[in-house]
Amino acid sequence: MQYLQVLLSSVFSIVVLFLLTKLMGNKQLSQLNMFDYITGITIGSIAAEMATELEKNPLFSIIAMVVYGFMAYFISVICTKSITLRKLFAGRTILLYDNGKFYRDNFKKARIDLSDFLTLCRVDGYFDLSQIQTAILEHNGTVSFLPVSTQRPATPDDLNLSPKQDYLISSVILDGHIMSTNLKMMGKNVEWLENELKLQGYNSAHEVYLATCDKSNNLRVYTSVKEKKNPDLFE
Image (cartoon, rainbow, N blue to C red; front, top):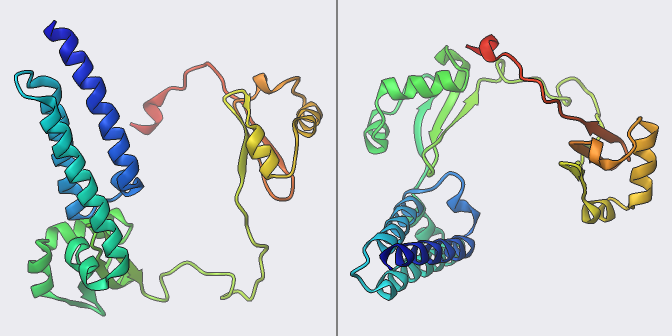
């Protein structure tokens, strides 16, 4: 009986977690600020206790999870309306380095030492600090780097070029299945897709692992192979 109770509690806690995550938004899946991080951990801990602490009333855990979830949602709403509250809950950006100067007090405030900063520079590809004009700690914990003008990549404007604007590319076949909705959004139908596949030597969509289409009606087809590649090249 206890095994069944654990099973049902686990399934129910997963459902509640899913609904709360949808309520709080996709930011729970990306880089989190400090408040989102604490809220996510707390809700997960409550859900785990709900599934294993059988002597406790599961309703109490559900109420606590819902309260945390709605508080996170409420705070995200008011943060969109108030810059002051946004800075309070999400944090502020901190200037760490600018024009060859380190800001020691800001390093202390950010709880980052020089070794950590140099590591972050190397991870972003900057092994020489003279290549960096400005470094800023974002409120989500990442460091943004502004390279000096002579080190940044050349842009079309620098070369007096006018390239064509790129547009989104849509998947029209995914794992052998035709994505009819995506085809409609591109202004195409299944008949067009089948004709294009035949022109490229494919008899049906089942032979295709992935196919994409752009705004210019260019269909790119990708297949899969079962053979295993030796991974030693990357070790």
